[in-house]
Length: 448
Image 1 (cartoon, one colour):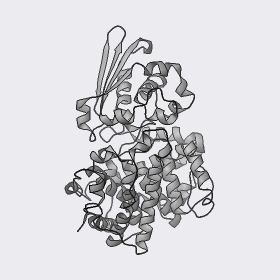
Image 2: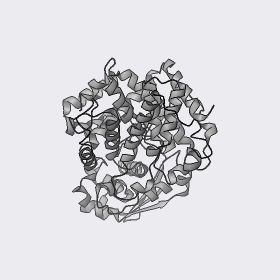
Image 3: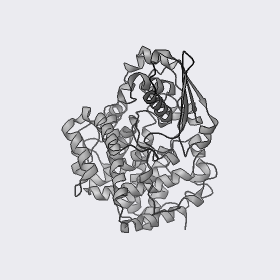
Image 4: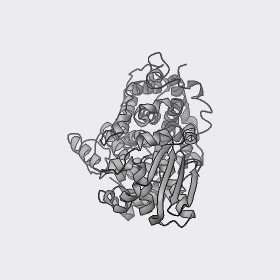
């Protein structure tokens, strides 16, 4: 059997699995966090322009679209919500694959589930399967894939297709066809987020639409290429170096990657997180007078230096990909959430001045641990020669230092309450984290 045929069989057989309470709760956390990212992105410029571009398609169908009362058909909703949920940079991460699974996977399967009036329980199971298939692919193609490609756009098509195939109850052959068809449309170049453009969030939007469409056409009988991953002109050869296909099914069905997801604690590129967390540790441990800071040295891995390279960012986009800015903002503002990326905040003199004291470089130890560990070594030197240092081995929110449910809800409330009000915000978190026997449309009605 080919790799995708194996995954097809896995998807069909997964309907016999009774997921543990822990696994299902992890899926609930992922769904809540996706909602936070989606609603936070619903009033961004990206969201406004995208909805304008889709005016012809809004007002038909029965799927909710963030930021408007107009509904859409499932494919359009998947694309729009997949894009919007990535635009505010609050979406989750699968660390080992350098991949954001929620935006493509949940955006696709939520739209499908809403169009079919499926239950929350069915949706949660589909999310688990979509995460499982796509995260496994993302892991074995790194780190070389991330040199040029945005994994969320490329591998995201498999997450969306797998989740939708599960929800549609496709048989093994159909599920394989869905994955194979989706994989031919995998795309997303890293150059898109090395400049201030609006393309990056459309990568997971495209992946969500592609995966949903692939599952629907597979259900209708369209076939795909079974050896698309490992074939001589396939995904692995084209998009990475020496993929470790022999590892892809290790412990499949016995351990669930949705339990190993990073939930973002900061509203910026995840490569900034270890340094921000290290700064937080030092500020919590020592009484540091900002006025006495002479130098801040940050040793990170290569992706941090390559991707988070902006200094004195001029736009919110640049600020989210600026190590110097986010470190300085954490010291001055106390948090790196939405306030840090307001146009007015970018002009804060104290942040601007502190940025000039931040030095970023590649640390060999941190570089060698990527992508399995996202780490940073930070030193704060004071004017009197005192040096405070901390080695942040992981990010707060990573599987080895996860956010608690209370921290997750706190983040969710901060993002959602200003946009939908306190009552609906509390209802959303309660329903998603705790309730059963509810339909997906009822969840959408709380925010749409």
